[in-house]
Length: 264
Image 1: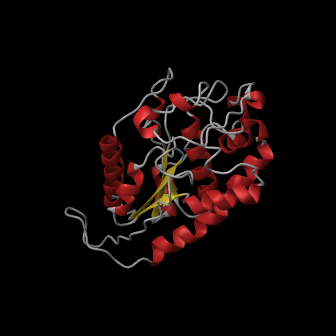
Image 2: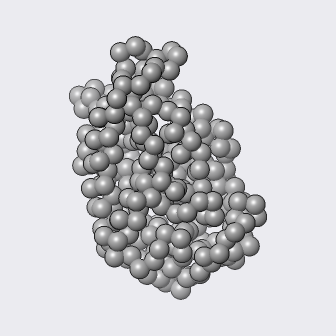
């Protein structure tokens, strides 16, 4: 993601909220790139930053993708490492005068993000499950979040809109349904799909991707208002006394609105 800002641009903007896209580096079938979740998170964050007074950060591009380890190219870090990185980023932002951090997650397997938000002041997780559900409806997606959980209609549509050059041929005939995934966390995704796809990418379109992003931009407004209106919280050790902190736990079910724990 290209970030042309200089330090003076950031100083002039004086944003009180920063956006941190969190993606992953994992298989997304034979037609979407390993960086799909990062591309999705960045597309959402960029659209939000274009419409709201926030500071946009570069993404975390490798996260918790252990359920995809059966496929070549997938790379993961531990949940504790991701937790520590997010907390370090939040602490650094507060020292520079930005008290609030929104985690814009494109990978539902990063369950730890809900925990770090839950335990932190001045942090939120976006989009929530309700935001994704509303965005699907607004964009006319035919699938549900449960059935379309990986490399399906939603993700393919966002990439067709934001970065069509990254989508290879083959999504039109790659539909695979596996709604019953009772042991995903124990066995990984491989027992439920040979291709790595769970969903209906054949239904994807650039127009749907555009409308999903537009709906998410609108949905961000209440999250921003909640951060601004939250009561002042206790300071963590080492933080400046004049920095305000707020608490919002907006984890929903998972960052892509899909039911835990049987998704990736």
